[in-house]
Length: 142
Image (tube, one colour):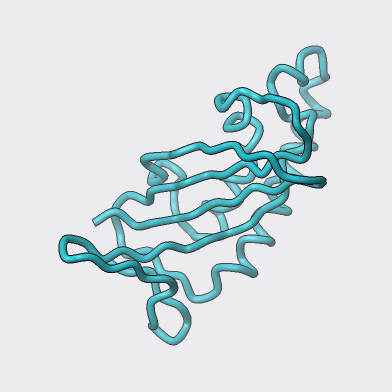
């Protein structure tokens, strides 16, 4: 199975004797601070809902503009998520993933797939610069 663009050509291909995979890279906005679970304590659920749904919608549109022509051929999708941090603060990987839920839901919307297909999910955190970003690499599992 390959990830193809609008002209049915492979997007990015890495070859070896045993496997041939295609990886699609999507860059999204860094999650708002209010969505991190340790920060969200005491925030009214209605406010969090609005922030999360706005983040999901923004991520959907960003992803749609970067994945033109991508077709899902069935099977699981391996996600490699890199959090390019906006500062030097240490954040837990599980909190980062929880904060990025809206972005992953938006990405699934843009791909027209169920987010249950995102397995396995690898999480990396790197020191970046403001405003930070979320880099998601998708690879269809064969």
